Length: 253
Image (cartoon, rainbow, N blue to C red; front, side, top):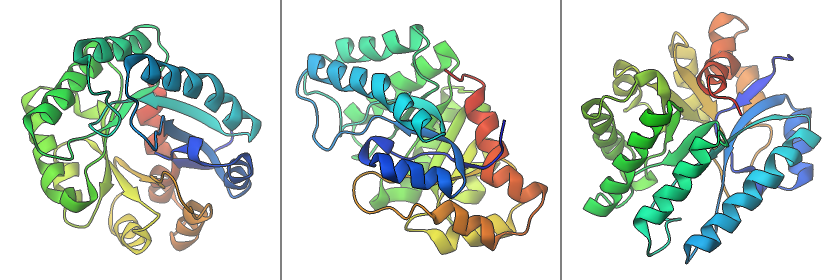
């Protein structure tokens, strides 16, 4: 297995095949990707169709670019159909029971309301039931506050810390995330200088790096640029590859 760079989250369905080949050319050998919708599906059947298409084609697209894909599905208020709560969760459970996904997520609470918290907790229970890694993403406008609140729920629900990755961790939230025992994801697109600083000042334990981008322009060199900023060695290897691989490979599909 070639050890290159591991992008802990990128919506590859928003990227062209040329983008994927460029990622590979500049060192990305593994990544976690999840289904991305620019518009919210209106029905359960529409959601199923989009998820089926993602699962069918995305692994093949990444393999064609010589990138090993870890596929994920998850629900937030932004991609949840307006009706059929139990049926939608049942569809996600079906994928989990068939061993279709390597990680659940990204999930997160953006509006801090009862419905979103219920959806978040329901998916945590599924992750615990099926022993799959869960990836959590806070909203940009309440990043620190919602990170802390979601960590409190994880502790209260007795979720295995080793099965949780929190994305978009910054200078303020990193200490609390690592102290809770979960994995931390530094964002290299949009927060590059912070990712460099935090990578250099850490011991590398449980820290991963992610492009964490959807639609729009993406710097495919971001992880390679970060690698150039860091001193070669065990700490850097953990941040750029080993930690993410250890997290996702336990349930690799």
